[in-house]
Length: 141
Length: 141
DNA sequence: CTAAACTTGACCATTTTAGTCAGGTATGTA
DNA sequence: TACATACCTGACTAAAATGGTCAAGTTTAG
Image (cartoon, rainbow over all chains, first blue to last red; front, top):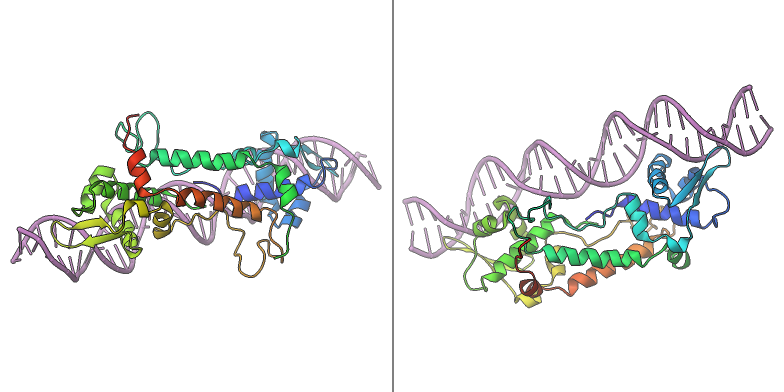
């Protein structure tokens, strides 16, 4: 299973970006300061988000990034996929043509992980950036 | 998020064990051969399963392990917990007294991970070893 | 008494993670 | 046109996690 802080940072950064209503580009430097994420790391992440057409970049002074779609159309699945977070559960060995235990059969637990994967993916497919904007304002501890 | 092959091996081994109907102890050597898991690694795993009272051990020749509970009462949550697989999603930094971004607030995505965690845990709390026995026989690829 | 099987703990190679660093290139503004 | 700002790219790396191995036992059935 892979779901690490790269995915979390991507979501945090996009929520931050979405707050600025898609009008003025937001610089990574600003996001870095507000969210406490290293600038260099953000650049890696946004490079991928751009390749996947989730954001657009505007170069030069006063440049930055803006969303490339409506927050309602950006599902969390899309974001994780973009930054290479596979919502894959445990892999049963290199599952090419053969089964996952080397034999020609699926391992006992194979179906279980398939089910789990579907369960989690469903969760993320039903969450959009818009949902996060509405429900998850920063809250006092 | 932590859900690796240690957890998967634990489940595989227990399903294997459960097949023998709780009557004759099953040696780790047999499980190792049938499931293709290293014997030494199995020993680490079963040591933890025993501490958590999921299995009982019987020493000496003809010894081995047997289940300590009814398969219906062994939920996957219990198994993962035993082998230290935290069904925890991304951690928002060391979340002691302070918020997850160093400030006194929760980070934007905090609630999201909480929700996900509940979502996944629910899945595992509703699955028992018995369910796996019924539904997940080895199947041809 | 001895072989089979459990028990414990140290150790380790490889991979992944979470970044840093260094050098670019593009462009709005003065 | 200079220059600061911001994007862009790729190489590199320290630390942690993973998935084990290895060694040296102890216990007990037969």
